[in-house]
Length: 327
Image (cartoon, rainbow, N blue to C red):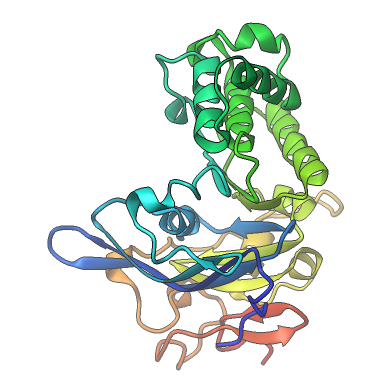
């Protein structure tokens, strides 16, 4: 299979990542061989409908899927193998070198611990700071994410802060380990529009200041276009298209990518009826034969059901997994 990067100089290199869950009766595959590279300082956007495997990919990388998950493939962080590590062996990686923030901070923060306690715990774990130095650094981090009255917020509980403030706290905790890569999994879904814009501007500012790499998982294609250097489109546990951001939005090649963009309103044109993608993402236990997007595809032709398409290069850093792309 052709891949868009060499991988040798990548910050993170993932090859043939597969995940299956044991439901008690059988092992159900949910990821079908993910290949991707992330360069140092790069911003990568990952898009796709719910259930396509965006979050599962990174939970698998960090060993957070639990005992029912069967994970295979290789993952390297600056040429250091992560796929050979298990359990506590991954602890020095999580938060310290790869940090992850989630879409609902109320589920990620401990409701019975003060904000300062949770921040200093992260600083102790990742940077061995304790006591007054840890509290001073926690205060600096809250200032860094633009939380007003940061000193007072250190002694607050999560329920005393708004959703936007709690998401800023989660970003501060992610920065506590000074990670090389931040994975932001739908970080603005639970927030109103104004606060969403503030959080995204904060992530862009932090990335610019620190040269940290960013993976942004989002349903919002506008946000991805604005913030990311490169875009990965996933469907039913596979990467179906990846390209530089500008090229993908101007010249989408996979029918699924075209469908996603076709369902967006264009503010620069006269109002017209949007064209949704018919059908739903298939259940992992009942995948169609051949191309998994086939039953929903407007370009489906006989032969598409014979085998799953593999990624092939159709332009500079532009790869598509479709039997008919470029035809």
